[in-house]
Every structure is written in C-alpha cells, then in structure tokens.
Image (cartoon, rainbow, N blue to C red):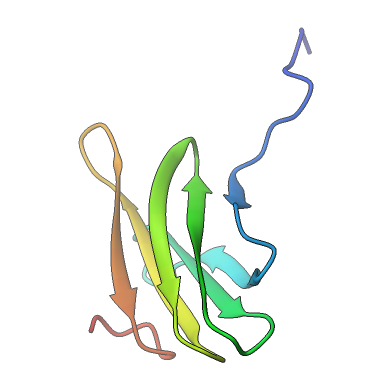
Length: 88
C-alpha cells in the first residue's frame, strides 16, 4: 500500500559479464548468501549493489565468487566464502 519508487531492487550488478547464480538466506540465519559468476570466461570487474550499498567485484576468467552479507550497525559487511559457504 502507498506509493513506491518506480523500480526497487535488493541486488544489482553493473556488469553484463557477471551473473547472479544464487541468492538465499544463510542456513545459520546470519545474513544472505550471494553467488556471482563470470559469464563469458574472460574475467570481469563491476559493482554489486546490495540493499543500496555498493561493493566492487573482480572475477577471474570463469570464476564463481560466493559472498556472505551480514548486517552490521548501519551497513552490510561482506565476506568471501568457498562454495560450501565457509569463510576464506
């Protein structure tokens, strides 16, 4: 109910060479898991915007990056994880 912005999004990538392949709540209840892949096998660089906060991503050729987003005091904290969502 009520007015909304023309477009709302929780997650956005700035590069067409990147693709979100997974987004889910963390199994332990601490934040969210996002998996981003390099689409064309050439490596890519871009920004991931999560809930209005911007993070720079660098992907190697054919790379898949797993990230955990946890809400801090006033912002999101992001940690790199392996494919089993263990911290790197």
